[in-house]
Image 1 (cartoon, helix red, strand yellow):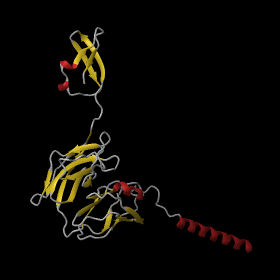
Image 2 (cartoon, helix red, strand yellow; image 1 turned 30 degrees about the horizontal axis):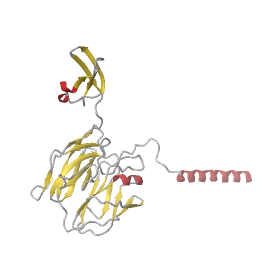
Image 3 (cartoon, one colour; image 1 turned 90 degrees about the horizontal axis):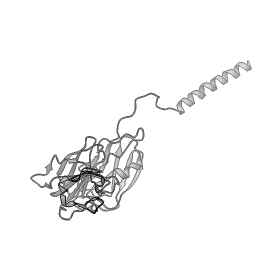
Image 4 (cartoon, one colour; image 1 turned 90 degrees about the vertical axis):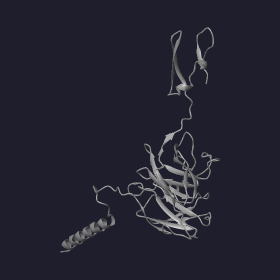
Amino acid sequence: MARKQQIKYLVIYAVLSFLFLSCANQMSPPGGDKDIIPPTIISSYPENGTTLFNESEIELTFSEYVNKSNINDAFFISPIMEKKPEFSWTNTTVEISFKEKFKVNTTYNLIIGTEITDVNNNNKMSDPFVLTFSTGSKIDSGKISGKVFADKADGTLIFAYLNKSDTLNIYKTKPDYVSQINKKGEYTIGGLGNGNYELFAVKDEFKDLLYNKGEDKIGIANKYIIVNDSSNKVDNINFFLTKEDTLAPSLQAATMTDKNHLIVEFNEPIDSTKLAKRKFYNCGFDKKYFIQR
């Protein structure tokens, strides 16, 4: 009888242990659908379109847990603020504390770019999130939009400079306004006041809001964009990205086919209009020819 009682207790113990372990190790069943849903921002404080904003903190809530370290590269605000804000997280909500005062009577665009990825499967945000608010009584309604054409253009930023056409140095001057393209290569810069804008598309590799020649790809708008009360929405300002060539061509080979003809090979295509007879000269009896730069 004692033996049967002991076996009974062992069976109950085994069943309880199994149930406990099953509850303690609840996981997604293997072989399920892969998470392909990108994270989004589902709420913000203040709400989009808020006016007379006079606080120094903004809150954003994501649809799921995201990699917190990406927020530094994904955060932009226009007009540009020199001091970086601080980010503090509570679950899926981030509080952004600004160390620089907002300008009075100014429309701001806060952007969270597509560098944000979720924790589950590193899915990137499909579209930049834009929060527009104003410290004044109205939201500036100027808007410029278009598209960037390039291979691997994801993350490309749009730099907008206000009334700086005569003195602009894009190597040293940060833009007044910034935006980012979505997965389709499309962009919009909103909340713009009246003025003349000069636009560039920049694949900003160093995330420093400057154009680094030889490192960043760039596209340049073919005209200044004028925003005013009668024309405050400008569409189809498009860009083709390219990387500036910073290396001069070099001579790879030169062959005399006869006394009157010379075949010259360069390491890359050159502007043939710059070649002329006066650029070639003979240095002596050894029949070596040189090309003047």
